[in-house]
Length: 461
Ligand SMILES: [Zn+2]
Image (spheres, rainbow, N blue to C red):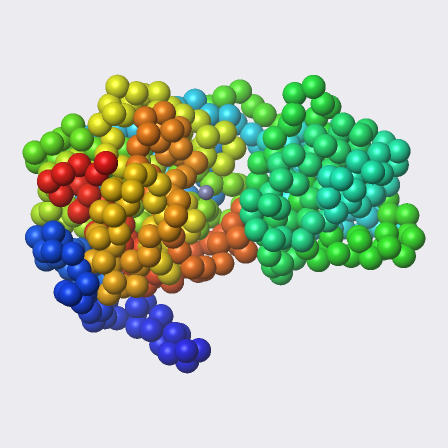
């Protein structure tokens, strides 16, 4: 519907009160036990869909604080803002739980073809990379398309800059070259590593992201180049041209910095010690505004609590939103949450993370027992009206992972359809890629799912 969609989008932006969608599910397909929750679910969905509050808050976050890399003053200022805003929303026990985070800084950086004819390339250093000497590193290029191919060319790698030119298939498969490539190349004597951006082809857009150095190998600087530049370097090498490159990066670590996970709650009215946790990670890479990765997940989960508060819905159990710090280049927020809440993890009923973007929601991934899956499937029928009722085979997230694994907690993740990997970790991760209706719908789905789990008499097991 190429014509209708811009119209709907315009209505969402311009008209404050666009009609809420039909929210009733076909009663013959909705399990009977859900009857007591139908009214509250309808109100949550109606409230979420009748305003663009989530989108506006996310836009404010990105416009005001920009990107939020661990250790940056931007992140800490945004954390202070979130604490104050959660208090203004009327959330309870709002606090910042201290976490020490790694403090990596990019500094200036550049990549250029030195010969045959000098010219600059578009690049983005990889997170946690070491820098080059001040004058940069100059060396000839060698291209590989797999680790096996590089190993087979081992005699030619010493003293070279290696480019892994691997087309994007899916994130899990392709990100190996970004994460492990530097140490694989260093093991054979390479002086620097480049990786074709881990994402579908964009408009000459490099993607940053963390690398992982292996102990016992030299640490060499590493950067991403755009799909277009990788293809161009490939063509030059294929023609037999000796391509000489110069990489300059000031990247380095400073001492660990003070940061925090932001926590806010609605205390349960009958079982306050049993907790349903939902959230996203508040830090981002140092490019773009981290609106999709993962400002959107933070704001949508937080908004779910605000809606409950606004509608005077206080569930049986406590609902807690957590904005974790340092997911991108350390995971310290998720680890600190586990350690600081160790005593109450056995009372964590379910943990949900939204870190796949807040595009059009299709439902949730779920990991847990078959009985719990049955319950979650039933609850999802309440989301049929907004077409977010699919329950996928696995749920989880990097920040909830340590707690979930430690205590065997049922885990969920919001699932969406959108161009997440086209923009994530790039300067293009900005608010304009997010449709206000999609984030409202994501908020509605999260609010209904977590509310019913926190409210139903039996604990999800
Ligand atoms: Zn993320």
